[in-house]
Image (spheres, helix red, strand yellow):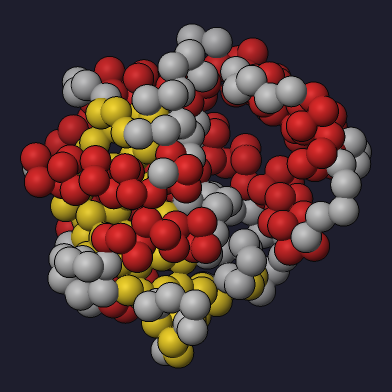
Amino acid sequence: MTTNPTDTAAVGSLKVPGARLHYEVRGEGPLIVLVGAPMDSAAFAPLAELLATDHTVLTTDPRGINRSKLDDPGQDSTPQLRADDLSRLIARIDAGPAIVVGSSGGAVSALALAQTHPDQVHTVVAHEPPLIELLEDSEQLRTGTEDLIATYLADDVTGAWKKFFAQANITMPEPLIEQMFGGERDPQQVADERRWFAHEMRASTYWQPDPAALRAATTRIVVGIGDDSAGQLCDRTSRALADSLGTEPTTFPGGHIGFVETPDLFATRLRMVVREG
């Protein structure tokens, strides 16, 4: 491992089947894993620093994203593969069982981990997993997903993002979308984005959890929803997941990426949720 000069993270890599994973470790104490998909470890760094005062905090770039390189760049990223990666990383750190906090596609990864390796995770906080198969209009949402993926792969990037935000029921002015996705952009960001559309979005959003297995497992499952996400697609999917588990969703500050917007408030709420368990 090497030290990242910008913060307290120790940086390492782990060879796993089909990939080499970039990961970062901060702090000491009970293990918390912060994971996204496709979001990489950099997005979680401010939250990780806050939690590292009394926890060991593990973050990672999911396979195929940024510094986690694939042997086969055309490989699809599935929740099962990402769960196996998390299992191997937790074993590598040897500080489990862990609290795993997953955001969006990372929440799907965390749920898959709870189903396949429940002994390694005592608590999952699944923050806004986009599990559209749990909804009554899943067929329509699948059609929309296929359309926006096709639009992106036809190189209409801003058109794809407009469709994405519309389906997600997230208000985003068209001029802002053009500004964010239509101009000069970081090549790594573009590569990660393209991989998400081409090789990850379907598997993450079409994945179907096993509610009976999750209810039967010893792992505590907390379904998180942003305070500002009311009416959005991931608010709907999260409520449907909580209902299938016979639980109530837990609110967190901010919206879909509240941990990025206000990491201090998110950390305070997360500590409270963990203590309640």
